[in-house]
Image 1 (cartoon, rainbow, N blue to C red):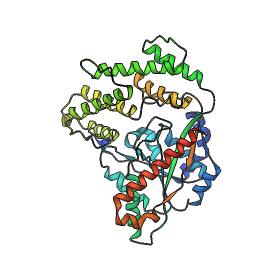
Image 2 (cartoon, rainbow, N blue to C red):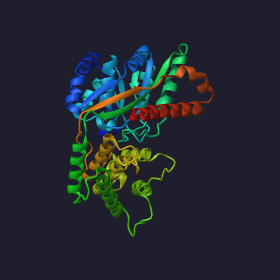
Image 3 (cartoon, rainbow, N blue to C red):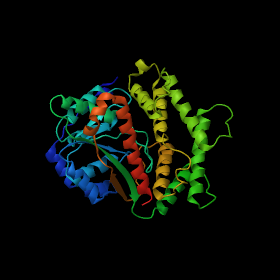
Image 4 (cartoon, rainbow, N blue to C red):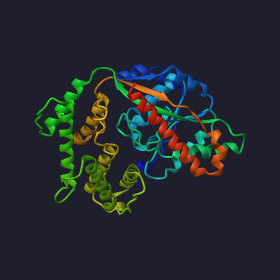
Length: 396
């Protein structure tokens, strides 16, 4: 494996520099990301009340801008955060900047011992405030919460157990954070423009002005193209869209695992299987016994799988907001144009809803008696809280 791909990037928090960045974060986010933060005063008070304690923030992960939003939250409540961020983000000066404001890396798809050790060390320090995205990756959907991974809770309990050996069991909070984006102006022109560009690229002549019908035509063309690319023989036309999407994802993940000689890990979520594949693709070619072209093809397939992981037919139809339209269009842009970060379509409010903090101290005795059951229970509870608050805010 290459030096870069296996490297751990530790936090190098510079409080003075971070405070300076926080002081200019609002105008900078507005200018660079077309973002502003929206959080209710009662939610700010909720966080202020426990700010002297250990806190792990657990936000959903709908976009690639979520780290910026959590930094804005740190500025709003006047706290210094640490952040766990995917290792591939630590490139060049951006990586150095991330380390300086308290971020550190994690290699997804492998047991990253260095990152785990760093996390346990941080969580044992007084008044640590750590951000972990428990979905393990970006859903690319404004109203969808993917299954939480239990690692954040497991590590928090392990740190608490270590602390309890030296002192009485302290307060230690897990905070569910529901993060949702809202456009601040009408987005019809942006939807029309994005649809027109996709239609022109795919050589589709629009036969209607109805946005939803045009979206479905574009999406179906992309789905058909992918099916023809990956499937041999006659396609099953009796399947509905969701069945076709699932069949395609299963084929793609099986194809990658077979090429790399992996035993299919059917019990694991697709995202976990993809991260394992991507970690292997960082290995030297001679260790993989594949060509460079094959590695590039497999990596692009994994990117495609992550892009379409949370998608389902009906996401836009069940609640046709501008946000859901543009979620889906951005996903299609990533596929058609082979880009990671489609241009932002308009100014947005990043709306944060803080759920009731969960004090692990209240569950510590139960945890000692049945660790797995308590971790699983709290993991499900926190995921449901984030989804409930997200769903409620969709209809506010």
